[in-house]
Amino acid sequence: MNKVILMGRLTKDPELRYTSVNNTAVCSFTLAVDRRFARQGEEKQADFIPVVAWSKLAEFCGKYFQKGRQVAVVGRIQTRTWDDNEGKKHYVTEVIAEEAYFADNKRSDDTGARAMGGSGSDQADGFYPIDDGDELPF
Image (cartoon, rainbow, N blue to C red; front, side, top):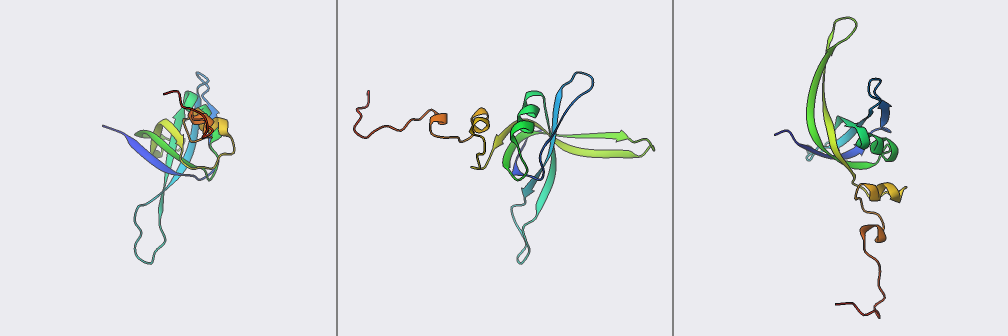
């Protein structure tokens, strides 16, 4: 089984590109994920994890995610290698995002929060305030 769940902050704005072959959207970003424990007297440390999203999810991330925003990503780990022009082999391990969510309450654009099922206003969640004097239908 290969499943990853991460929550962290974006280190910079996501980079949205389109492939030259099929014009498929691909969005890359890095998440700073705090480690759970810190040694006594030391500052908490973070791991910087590269994430790649494809297609509609890539377009969503490119449009709504911003540097500093806390997000949660569900996906899988993937490794790949390639040789550069000088014949040097490069290795990379990254998370391929299958789901992405807002994980903080900073809402500069409520539409985006609702699109991913995030916490928007009460009306966005399907709940409406009622007057205490109103009778309930049940």
